[in-house]
Image 1 (cartoon, rainbow, N blue to C red):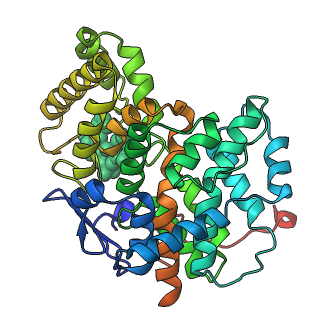
Image 2 (image 1 turned 180 degrees about the vertical axis):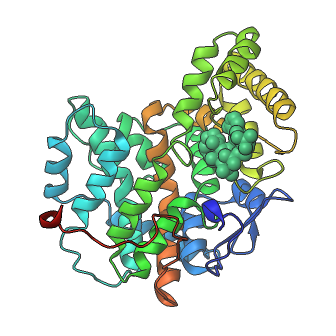
Image 3 (image 1 turned 30 degrees about the horizontal axis):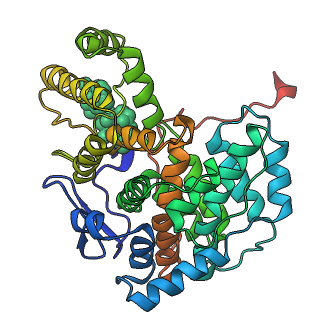
Length: 368
Ligand code: COA
């Protein structure tokens, strides 16, 4: 029995390769460090959907397709408006995607649907965010790219080029990551020949958990609770003594530094207030020192969520939208995996070892 399916290979993919021993991540043959430097979210999405980087004309066409798909049916807006204002954004996103999928009638997932849904997910997040604040959703702007339009829809102001670049880098870095829990969930649903929206709803549900995508807002909560860097040691020792997990530390795959975390650390250094970055660094160093002393066999590092929190905070996103913003990025990977699954499908159906009670006879209630 292999609890948590660690090291079990259940699919072949051309989309991404996580090498946790050497700290590398590749999307369709390209190193994530290079993609983070040169690619926009649209480049990365095109790469994952087509297995090659776009030409200039192909990129222009994709941007147009994404811009054309920026719209939400009234029924989705009505459903979002009716949600209680204190609904968690990931629950609103899951509900919005589900409402969008009403009527999809088991259509075989295709690229046009993947592009449309990727364009619509930021609209759902932003519409819900504005409505819960008593404001009306804004009309999307076709002149802005995916990242800038998302920030505009949330705030009503087009982002600065620094904010846009930072969010683009984040969206590229998080766009895919092998067979993580949410991607696996999407592929399991797709493997039953269900529809794209159902697969994405499952993925959103999996991403929401704190052991997967729900960690970054908790990283900020931790940094706030620690306050001054001098408090880090005491706070972390007390949290670990209570058997709590340190958010933003540890990873199933990476047994060395996660390349995405390193890029995000540099980005955080360039975009965050110096005091905030110094505090984050102190917490990182202290947390790693203590964890490595307490778990010498574990090879623990900070993960992608640790500095994601700092970067998303710096571009002005409210912390309870961090996981939904992760979903905005991962839409490219999730949809690409669904298309890959259905192109060469076999239903995913693992087995379980039965450890329940031994066979016995049913005694009818009448005979008791
Ligand atoms: N804080 C404290 N201890 C941690 C830890 C953390 N963040 N991450 C791992 N460990 C410890 C565990 O306690 C465990 O030790 P034990 O066997 O003595 O209890 C050991 O390291 C291995 O952890 P395990 O939970 O088996 O690893 P995993 O591969 O199943 O889980 C994570 C990976 C990401 C779920 C885990 O590291 C975690 O919970 N991290 C915090 C949440 C987080 O940052 N999530 C975002 C992920 S990108």
